[in-house]
Image (cartoon, rainbow, N blue to C red; front, side, top):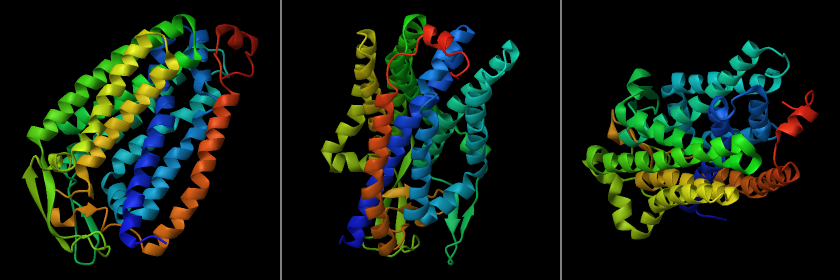
Length: 379
C-alpha cells in the first residue's frame, strides 16, 4: 500500500511515538519512585505515594517493551549495534528496574522500619537510574557513537562504558531526569492531598524550573560545542539497507540544519520550554491535571527536539561517519515494515484504550485514611 520510502518515514514517527509513550506513561511512575523518599516523611505517607502508581506501574511497562520491540523489528542494525555497544549501560538499567517489582510487592509485607526504608531507596534507584541512563544515551547519540561496520556489515564498538559518561552526555542525563521527576510530581498532585500534595507541588516547581535551565544549556552546547553529521552523497529515501553506501561528514552546527531548513520545526523546542513554564504556573495555581498535561508536552518537546535535530540520522558513528545509520538505510524489508504497520494500527489503539480505561476506573485521591483502612491489601 505504501512506498518503501514512506514506510521508512512512518516507522521513524512510530518509534518516536512509542518512545514518547514510554517517557510519559512509565516516566511518571519513575518520577514518583525518585520522589518517594523525599515527599513521604513517614511510613503512611510513603505508602500513599506508592499506591498512587501501584495499580498501573506494571501495565506501563508495555510501552518499554513496545519501544524496544519496534526498534528490533524496524531498525535491526540499530538494535544490534546499540544493545551491544551500550551493553553495560543497558544492564545497569535492567539491574535498577529489578528493584521495582520486588519493591512494590514486598516493601510493606514486613513491619520493619529497616526493611521498608531499604525498599524505599530501592524504588528510588529504580526510578532515578533509568531516566538518567536513557538521557546519557541520547547525549552520546548527538555526539556520535564509537562504532563502525566492516564490509560484511558486522558492527564493531570501539568505545568503553566510562567514555559514555562524558560531560555533555551527563548534562543530557540530568535533563531527562529533571523532566521525568517533574512529571512524576505532577502525577502526585493529581492523586494526593495534604502534606504529600504540598511537598509534591514544591518538587514540581523546582524540577520544571531545572528542566528549563538544563534544556537551555544543552541547546546552547549543541549549537556551539558539538559537531553534527551531514550527508554529502547517497542515502536516498529509497536506498537499500546498506549504511556503507553513502558519504557523511562532520560539521560544526550541523544539528541545527533542519531547524533552519524547516522553520516550523522551531515549535518543537518551543514546546519543551512552554510546557515546563506552564507546568510551573499550573502547579502554583493548584491545577494538577493541566500541570500533568503541560509536563507531558514539555517531554514531547525535549525528546522531539533531539529527533528533529538528528533526522535522518538514527545512530551516527564517531569512529567512521560513513557507518552512521539513518532512517533510510538501517531498516527492515518493505514486507516487514508493512506487516508491522498494520499490526501497530490495530493494537496500539487497543493499548491506549485499555490504559485510559484502567486509569479512569482507578482514579481519585489516595489518602491516609485509605491506607489505614486497607492496611493488608494496599501496597
